[in-house]
Length: 287
Image (cartoon, rainbow, N blue to C red; front, side, top):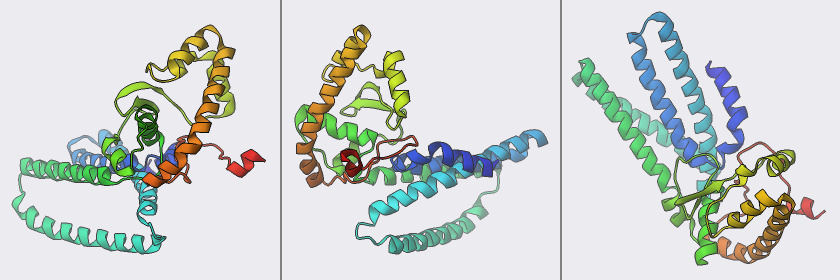
């Protein structure tokens, strides 16, 4: 079950692991801690239920391995600012060894005081809560310099409304670690719609022609008050307006790029799409 889950999880969500590195890094800890609880619960159940519980914990550990490994690679690349990825990984492995050794020594002292089931479960849940709380704080402290969907929405909503460029540090304080897939929030608060990036061209065309609800946007300061109404009445006119909006945005974006780079954003890495697809470089598009 664990091996099958590893293959399926990497195939299904492999593309979204890099853009959502912070979320999947914390999710890996949630998967691992949940698997640990299931392992501890399994002896209390009959044989058939125990097999199902242990299979579930094996799946969760497989998900933890894929999510942790992929997100760790992205985070390591983020911290290797001087191209010292090998050195960083070596020191990270040494740090994990030291932490594991300290955990073994602390566990040897604590285990002699834990004898009853109540004390065992209380200690387990307390330590797991501390583990998740500290990892949540650690993930929130990371200020990624690439623009994924949520960070791009935060940056451009402030840029459009206030003409203010947020730094990666400011965005890290506003972004949510866990959020609904594809949700778009105006300045990190009110939900204004849902967006999917990286879909196939035919899927986008079918969505424009047959599923107007997928483009619903309800914020008064966006094109959606205009686009959705026109889409319901006259779809070709909505497409024309969308293309005009993209042209205007493209002209403004050229002026935004130097300001974004000066604020510390890395615009050379594409981290917006969460679906498997092809990428086009600017030279290929111009050709």
